[in-house]
Image 1 (cartoon, one colour):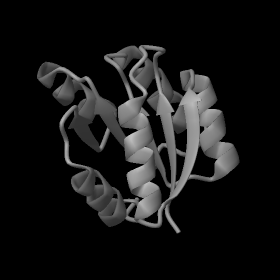
Image 2: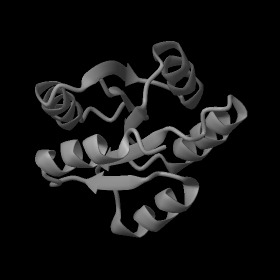
Image 3: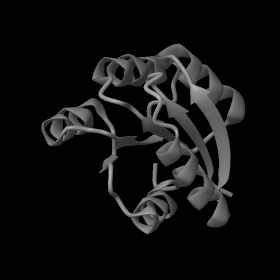
Image 4: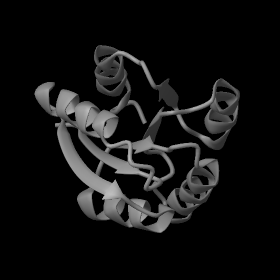
Length: 126
């Protein structure tokens, strides 16, 4: 079974999308570890403890958080996890997120079926 850690990088009050994505993944038979709001270090620690295949972040425009987290993942030897991001993300930020190692970005309005399909198709390829 695919295990996904879902976390938010900021306390911006937008929880509906995170909860909706988590439920869509569960409905597809994917095991979800719901982390809530986590720092970069907490995200990495949780990923290690829970032995997840994927980290799904609602980044709320917090690219610096993603940069720190990616370096920490590499330092811990788990830099090969599939990382996806979503939320209220500016189009101009997507190339930078991908350069940091985020595999795919799902901005507000993305279809749940597309998020689920991407994770199902790519989680075990890393």
